[in-house]
Length: 64
Image (cartoon, rainbow, N blue to C red; front, side):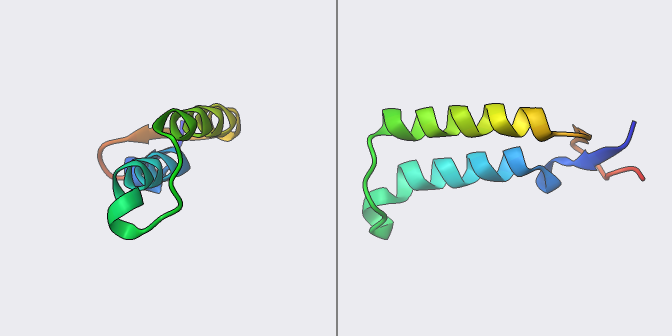
């Protein structure tokens, strides 16, 4: 099965953005959302991404 490095994963980046939004709302002046709302949005996005995922991820280098 083809693999990809974790940093090539959409799921990884969606979750990084979600964490940045949670912790950066006030310091970065982002629109403030309740933490529960952010977690609900991330949950839905993770489910959607799980269905469109085709490749397995690895910690190391991707294989062709």
